[in-house]
Each structure stands twice: as structure tokens, then as C-alpha cells.
Length: 265
Image (cartoon, rainbow, N blue to C red; front, side, top):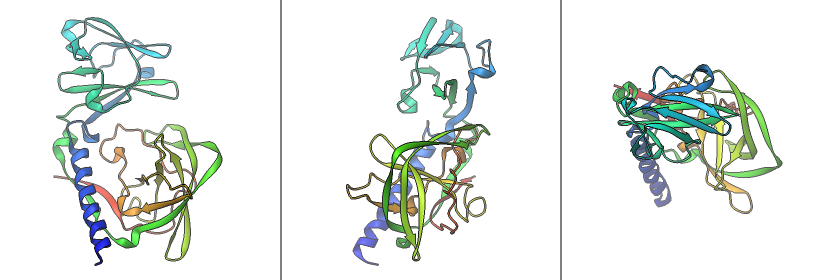
């Protein structure tokens, strides 16, 4: 194995170890125990959560008494707090209940509260992420082709609800001399995000996966490293609303690379 290949393989091992640590951390995806949509609770009382939660325009209003044991910004809440959607890391969410973090979420005008519990059954059961060892064959050179204007397609989500998925272009790459493309979203930092399936999906790997290439170069060149195909959050907890692959993002080949499934004890 060449020095470059050895370095790439070592880099993948480090990436895999970091992924496992992140997933299994106190507030990783395994700790999500519920996503509670306020539209299901018009009176504002969510059985699984303390306090009263109600919408007020572009804010959520949380009302609590001392007995609820809620804190906002690290201080006990008695009375009312006005909240917006949390944008930062889970452990920095404004609302907490003991070690639990209650994360405010907004999707297409609907509000929800997510409950992250470090003592979740899924986190206690987790053992490892099943992933295929690094194979240089799947580290591909690709080209990013931006769309003239951003597009939004409606796709089903893991909770059975159809939502919009924004797409900014496509990446093209070759496998064994045949070109393939994946539609991608463009993140705020210029990096890319693809939701894709392939011939292994639902068989030897989870039903779909994510890919997050770094920002393309000015000429559109981009590394498409399928060794770093990711399991989506909903592979770790049923309460995520991951989007399914958009039309055209199911590859006709078997991508025998990247993360494949969660392994429990």
C-alpha cells in the first residue's frame, strides 16, 4: 500500500472512531427519546414532558412551576419563557430537565420539542457502528454542477410525512467507467449533502445513507469518498425525521463502503 493510501486509511480509522464517539455521546442521536409535535397537543400539555408548551407567532412559549423542575438558560423556570428554535449543539439547548435536554424544533411552520435523555435505552444498548474497512476504490474524483437556481423537491420523511428538500446541484463521478450522479444540498459553509440509496440499501446496509463531501474547488472538482457514507440519525433513534433520497438518488450499483448498520449488544 502506498504512503498516500496508508494515510487515507488511517484518516478513515480516525474518522470512524470519532463518529462512534459522537453517536454514543450523552447527547448523540442515540439519546433522542421523542419528537413531540405541538399540533398533536392543542392544550399544550405533552404527556412525556413537564410544563405547558404553546405557539405564539414565531416563538414558542413555555410555562412552568417550580415542581416541573425545568431550567431555561441554566436557571429554574417559574413562570413564562419565550423560545425560538435551537440551532446549536444539543447540550447547549436552552431548556433542560435534569440531565435531559428539551430541544425546540421548527419545520415548515410546525413546532416540536425533542427530548434527549443520556440514559435512553438505545444508548445503553448500543455497541458499535458496522462499517466496511477503507477501500481506496471508493475514494472518487467528482465534479459539482450547480443548478442555475436552487430547487425544492417534496420527499417522504422517516416519520411518514412529506416535506421539502432543498437541492443546489449535483455531483458526478465514475465507478468502473460508468458515470453516476447524485443531487445534493449546499450547506452554509459550502459543503455538500446527499441523501442516497444503492443496491445494498435495505439488505446489507441501512435503507438509505448520507454523504457529506467537502466544499468543491473553484473549478467544481470535489472528492466523493463513499468510504465516508453515513448512517442517518434515524438509524439510531426512531424519532428523527430524516428525508428519504430524492428521485434519481438511488444508485444502480452496490456501494460496498462506509457505514452499514447499527450494532447493539
